[in-house]
Picture 1: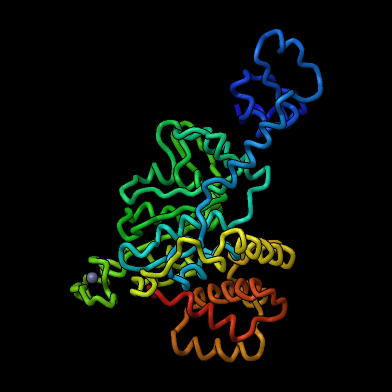
Picture 2: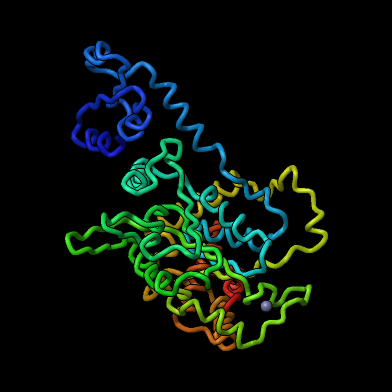
Length: 383
Ligand SMILES: [Zn+2]
């Protein structure tokens, strides 16, 4: 219904649907959709708009706000929250490394709420993908940024798409939203490899004997992993007994080329006892999703105005030009390169992230050492 209504709107036609489907048709073609409840009323459809348009409009805008989890409700983890804000601002992919139960997936679920709302065309794209997928389209989700969290046992077909009828997969269902892969090293290696293409191009091509389809898949990747097979390497409890070889093998399950596309890698440690006892019932206003979403939005607008793209999209060859450092920044970078042995790709990631942090601070000039230093901090885990 949604796609039919969208098509009608593009052709400047009106669409008459059963009353029960009006809400869905209305989303794609407001003012052009009519949902008479009787045949007689259908005969009366001439021009103008249907009578209950105001109720429909109110319903859909309420739905967007309801049920968006608030960042302020997450206990402690200030560093991880900050990384989430940076990720939202520059569109950067994010890897969270920490023991089980530290809130990695809770944090990831709060990313869509920090992103600006979908514009009408994007909303239609997202709803269109859902409507041709196996899970179908839910009018209550219209206009929301998707959040998809497939299990690590999911097949390549389920994540990338495919099957006899070439359905879109989780990566496409996450289009314009967030694809969350918890327990990253547990995913099938071939599945992870196949995500490299959409991360680069924003598109997934599915080829079958009879047909070839392309589905959009411009998602923001958030991944989480334990630091070692038992999950407690580096934890203050000291309970990890994993051998260095086991830890290295576990981490090596994630390929370098995939890791290369993740700009931010941070540790999410166990909470201290003070943090555990902290009262967050009222929420920490500093981290309120509504407040941060406003900052994220202006940081993104600054990027679009400057380069026409989000910082994550800056190609490596342009990174040094578009993410210029001031004199002190250049000095710090030279030291960091010697100390951490930054590769060329690593360098580009740091520059993009530093630019985003400067944009969040409303800094328009070249990047200084403070913003660069934070960017260096935000890529320390798993190197
Ligand atoms: Zn361990």
